[in-house]
Image (cartoon, rainbow, N blue to C red; front, side):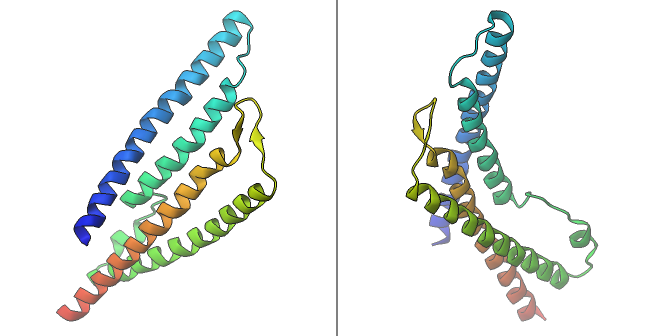
Length: 168
């Protein structure tokens, strides 16, 4: 079972890496073209700004998922590094995992409300003519991945505490 989960984790990481590269390129290219056409040709290309924003949203959320996967999202480790015992560090990890899950639960509720509202009142991004939920989908990706990685960290902390209590 752990092998399957590790394989899924590596697959998700590969997908996110590709997504980050593609959306970085799209965002950069769109902004460069937008600046050049406005400055040199006094021309504004329809949809270029919206496309760059659309790609940027995906970039930010995919990057946040990658940081969460690595445990590097909003890290303040002065307390963790100053704890002298392995048991203290394990309890610290457990508290971080619980706090993360609580925050992700609030974020999930907000995203669910946003999607529910959008389904009742469907809208499109006018210039691109795509549904608004395409721009909201990265938020759902972050909630889903944040919940999965929060549960992973919770399980790791509980396993660590279990091992430490058996050793004592």
